[in-house]
Structures are given as C-alpha cells and as structure tokens.
Length: 72
Image (cartoon, rainbow, N blue to C red; front, side, top):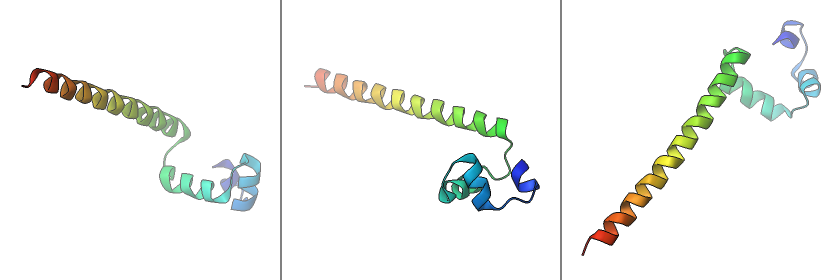
C-alpha cells in the first residue's frame, strides 16, 4: 500500500514485490480493504478451516466404514 500511496504504477509494484500482475489483481480483489496483519490472520484461519474440514471428512468416512461393518 505504501507504493500505491507513492503513486507507483501496478507494473512497478509487481516488479518490486516480484509477482505477476494477475496475482496482484487477485490479491487486491481478495484482500482489498484488509490490513496486512488481518490478511495474515485470515490466511491462518483459512488453513485451519481446511484442516478441520479434512479431519471431519476422515471421521465421517470412518463412521461410514464402521456402520458397514456392523450392518448385516
């Protein structure tokens, strides 16, 4: 955001932070009004959420397998 405030163009900003322009635009769309610390926290929460979803899916699979073993 400092580079934007300095009036730098998107091309220059992408070169400085070493990302492609589509990546920059995706980040802007995703995290537009979010501060850096909030964005980091959001990313951490998304990773935790994905982990919990995976654990839940595994538990549901185990539950289904156990039901199949018990059912006649």
